[in-house]
Image 1 (cartoon, rainbow, N blue to C red):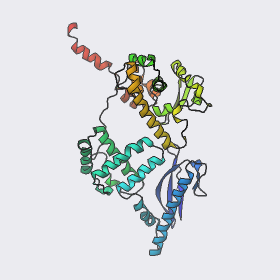
Image 2 (cartoon, rainbow, N blue to C red; image 1 turned 90 degrees about the vertical axis):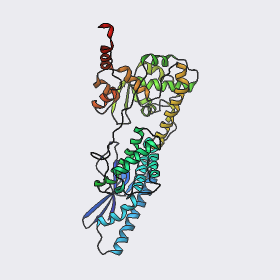
Image 3 (cartoon, one colour; image 1 turned 180 degrees about the vertical axis):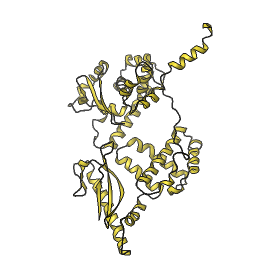
Image 4 (tube, rainbow, N blue to C red; image 1 turned 120 degrees about the vertical axis):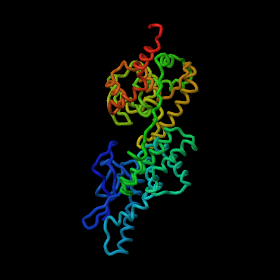
Length: 404
């Protein structure tokens, strides 16, 4: 018997993995389908995704295909052999679902797209392509991806593709992710895993984080901008800054219903941490500019996502990415020159600017709550880029010859 089962374990995003189980002689073997669903969206009795799911038709067609393929393999083996185990059927199915690296990489990318992870999908797809080009456009078994091969690939990324150290390491991270999926799905033996202690270590070089100071933020607040879209870009940056460097993905998702009793209540998209912040007077003044366009309490505050299907996560993330790129360009070419700000400014630098101005004036525990970091260690590492008082005092102590 071959059936689909939704695992009981609930993942961080509220979904569970849908798996294919093959039962034979009271034994079962499992393989991943690459699909994740909420339990409310799965009809176990009918073996179907419920019709109220936005992608039910496409997902059910895909599942029907997977079941059909599995049954075909089962019948094929029973025709040849008198006894067939669940494992033998699974082995027959799995080679076509990612036994080699690039077949598994296709599944990995498809799952990112299915999960609506546009940014990771668009970043990782060319990284997979670079690895395949490095291998002369040929597929490769996981066992042949060795430490020396990966070291050569990293050198290729830096020397031939002219990528930074950080970007080259991101290429290795993708390969590691594909490996991990293959091991999790029991396609390969974990002994072939080329990452970890004594093998390939994933270690990112420190990155420099620089934010605007108070005077530059004041310039941005006060500069007169006649063009509506220039003012809108400035507004987005300032609201992000006023809310402790809110990420642009969360900023564009803000709805009027998120504001209650002079407080903002929202869940951070990156780690699903919830909380609320007092709505500063400066934010209230900006929101008044957008209130005439409010259709209802559940309407988006800002216009970018108003005509986008909110159920299609991939499309939503794509719109957010394109908006962020467009806003960054407006800030760079119009807003900052008008404000006579020479430092590089993007939407993300609103977060760095808040941290830079906060410095060591706010306790780390409070900053952790404002930034919604998962642990205090993350906050300590992040703020290490902006707290320089001890090193500045030490430098002054040594160089202050006149005081001696």
